[in-house]
Amino acid sequence: MPQPPFLHRQDAGQQLAARLASLHDWPDTTVLALPRGGVPVASEVAAVLGAPLDVFVVRKLGLPGHEEVAMGAVASGGVRVLNDDLVRRAGVTPEALAAVEIRERAELARRERVYREGRTPAPVAGRTALLVDDGVATGATLRAGVTALRALSPARVVVAVPVAPPNACRTLRTLADGVVCLLTPPDFRAVGQFYRDFAQTSDGEVRDLLARHARPQESP
Image (cartoon, rainbow, N blue to C red; front, top):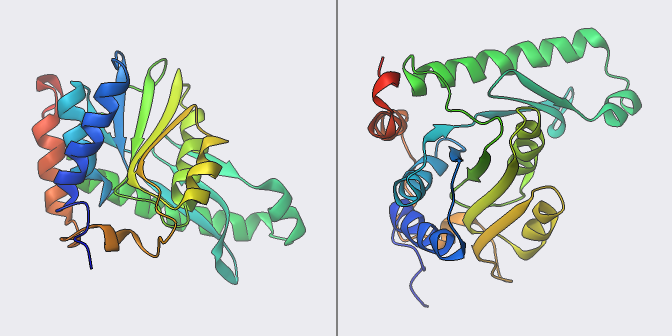
């Protein structure tokens, strides 16, 4: 059986950064990582492109009773996106929707507080928002992320990932202004199969990588 193409997330980030740098220059770009696994990948990308790095936390709003189905999402920057048709068809009451949103916003706020350690969010408005993860399975979180990012008025939203199934990449291309997938294997089963080391990224590692990229005026 052949070895996986990526040693670990840092290696995947270096390969992804090389591909991105070969395409064109990336002025006025902010690299946004989906935590936690996207952060080590995005850190390498931000270093090569000379761009600021931040997390973009996305929390799915699960349909009551069918939590695996997303009726919307909340994200960094106070963003909320809703599938109004689904909410209406499922008969979700305003009270039920509010309860789900309150719970997910609390978790979102907790994660941002833990990861940023008091630093202000990196600028997005009027810039290219480069949304990075360590890979795509279903693509649901990235799709929600792209939609949510639009509310922050970036000039462009580009998705960049080391590996994704072909159909997920095709779907993302209908939503984002650009998509860079290093590998789109037809035999895709799980993101982890393409990494030799796919150990879980810790909150501490996320904090350390963000602190390493923080601009001096952002230090807490």
